Length: 201
Image 1 (tube, rainbow, N blue to C red):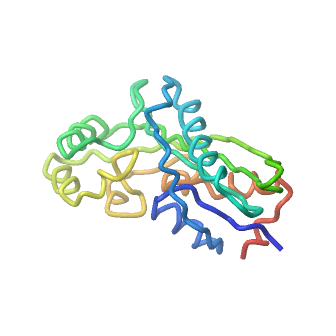
Image 2: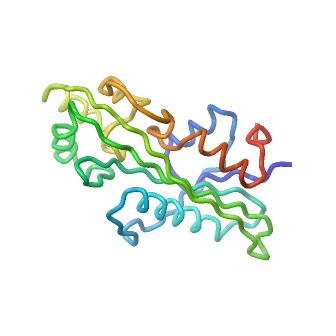
């Protein structure tokens, strides 16, 4: 029997990705304070944040479980961007991104809680990177998109699986990584921990 699968995130997109591939995850948002992690390297940053979220939830698990923590950022011009602070910031971000290519980094931390009482855990931390090509869109389109409020909830200031998909010319790499978690990477991590992804169907 497969252990309980727990998603340490409030992200509807991540939950939907898991459901799409047959994994019914328990959603337990971590409430992890992301301001405690500072790093100028996007790969290191998202991995540390993902691990912090997964650890926070794993601390309170009373049963054998797999806890998945994720975090995403966009890197452009050697700068790291998370969710925009407000509509003005989102508009400015899109004016900078349009017609250009950025890298979307998602950190994945998977904790296998074998024996909760003995604090016996196996932990894997990985990062997936996907190149995103943004369309050359007009100021009017940018303002209309930001007014939907969709980009305000996304690290890259767009949702590939939403209206934002209209403004992405192409991606190079893992598609689901841009939405919130890399399904192929998750499969690989589960295998490395000795689980079959099909056991969670």
